Image 1 (cartoon, rainbow, N blue to C red):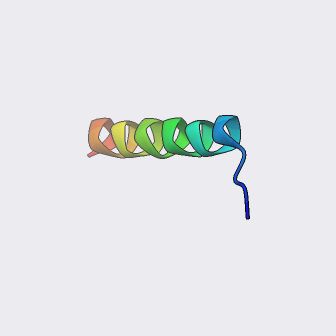
Image 2: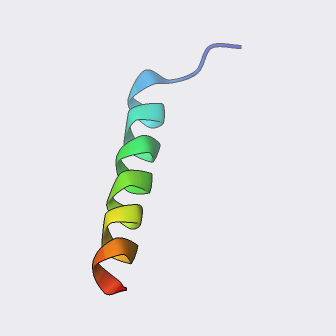
Image 3: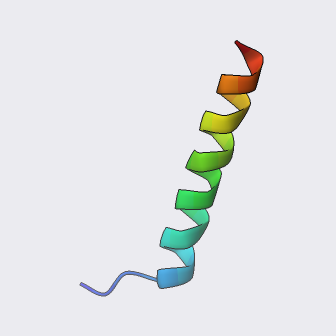
Length: 26
């Protein structure tokens, strides 16, 4: 299987943004 690099990078960016938002929310 060949993963789409841009898709993986987008998911990683979304995860980091989500974690940052959760950290700021606390």
